[in-house]
Length: 193
Ligand code: HEM
Ligand code: HEM
Image (cartoon, rainbow, N blue to C red; front, side):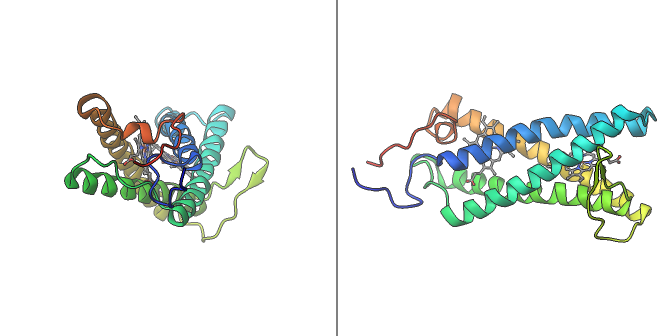
């Protein structure tokens, strides 16, 4: 069996799939956590130990996502991706590539804006144990604007993930091609004909 040159594999590598599904797990946790904690704090006006714990958890998970995505992008740029599923049209190719790079952009921008927001506010404590580095001078007006963009970015991320998942389901259920199988946790590396 000949070695398959990089970028010519039919499925994403185990590492790429690991990065993908860990990112999914953290983002799926992070969004409702962000909505609930800010509802509890800003709408209900409850700033107790539970709200603090939720904010600390959101900041921690957000930073985990940021580092995970940076590592994932370095890996992605170094190793590339498998060639496109052979049966997809050039329109589908263009749409999926654009969606993927926009997802990466949002996965970087949203946590960076979150961090900038807490640095400006400032609200840098994590679980009352450590403080994140401040990096910028406090400015609550600027913090409010940055949190607004953080919210818009998170909304765009959720909508784009919706499009992305709809695309994956379209390939699996309607087009019945091999696109979803390339990213499934159990996908083995298949030989190229
Ligand atoms: C991909 C990562 C992230 C996602 C998807 C995300 C998502 C969200 C969402 C959906 C909200 C609720 C917005 C609202 O209801 O107004 C929120 C609020 C918030 N996020 Fe994030 N977040 C992420 C990373 C971060 C990071 C890294 C930090 C800080 C280190 C952070 C700090 C905050 C804060 C402090 C709020 C509350 C803002 C307010 O009270 O107005 N987030 N986030
Ligand atoms: C938070 C949710 C998600 C995010 C942020 C996300 C992000 C991404 C990104 C950035 C890529 C591009 C990989 C690359 O080429 O470097 C990708 C690929 C892929 N994702 Fe997701 N994804 C999410 C959820 C899902 C879900 C729930 C499914 C399945 C139902 C899925 C199925 C796929 C598939 C099949 C590919 C490969 C597409 C192809 O081979 O062209 N994703 N995802």
